[in-house]
Length: 162
Image 1 (cartoon, rainbow, N blue to C red):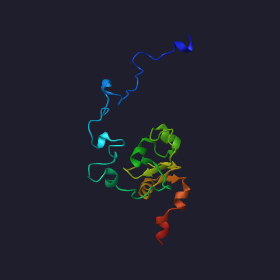
Image 2: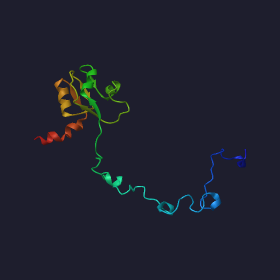
Image 3: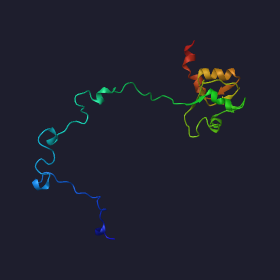
Image 4: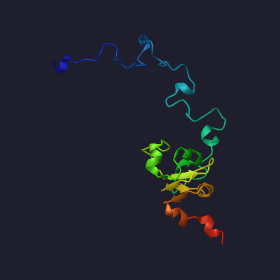
């Protein structure tokens, strides 16, 4: 095979249509643009955002309302009702939640316990953030929550209660 043997497949390489090159071409004179008018002119046409006079969509939509908090912490949520599958008195950590398929093994977000449902067993939870209602339900059932100590120190509601 040589370089001069190379060629595109039949039908894949089309020549550019040359318009405005005389009557005999079939595309002479007005070059397929019709007679006069905005679309016949060089640079003719309109702005793609123009909508015929109605308020265009880029003006109808709200313009950057609000903001996205860069310090927001996104938690992986655990429902209290899902913890009933563990045995009474068990110590439950992230590995146990992954084994029970309540949390994915690839999950890197911090865990947060929500007070959805009831708990009838005393469980000891480790390295879990919580809501006040969830913590009170776990402690009422005889369990405890350890770890995530920074939540106790940074709780703004308890410091303002005085």
